[in-house]
Length: 199
Image (cartoon, rainbow, N blue to C red):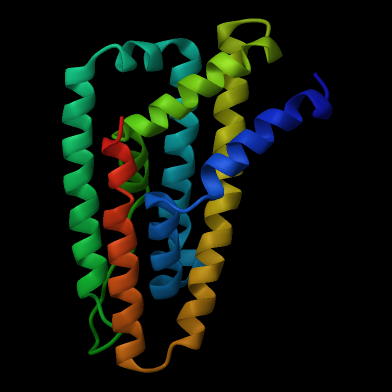
């Protein structure tokens, strides 16, 4: 297997993970409020979550999930509620570390959960498994290949968004600027629910 044969998969994963969505919005908000280092757990959780979904999709679990529309609806509903809850948390927060309040960044487990509930993530990785099956000699090899590729590329993409959030955090000085940022990020997070319910 050469880098030339892997390049289409890497590009597919990069385009899929770096475009704005729920995970990138969360990484940006976390970077702005907590800095890069304290945002590593949630970024790692999202990356591992996507990598594990890709691994499971290549192993066949994703196809089973896509065949159960009722389960997809339940996942969409739970995931939407979770994203709305996160958006409210972000929208109501003020500047970081004010009034001695201690606010914790989103956890690793929450990052994993955010990816696992999303049927769009499953559909994307099932599509990747079908499109790039020829790269591997068996489903197990394909699972490892897709899982590791999506995990690493997602980690890179989320790090870019988190660094952008950290930059915003350094530029914002006034409380009203933080309010605008927080409400904007909350709205983007809620808007990321819409594509999940299409189709």
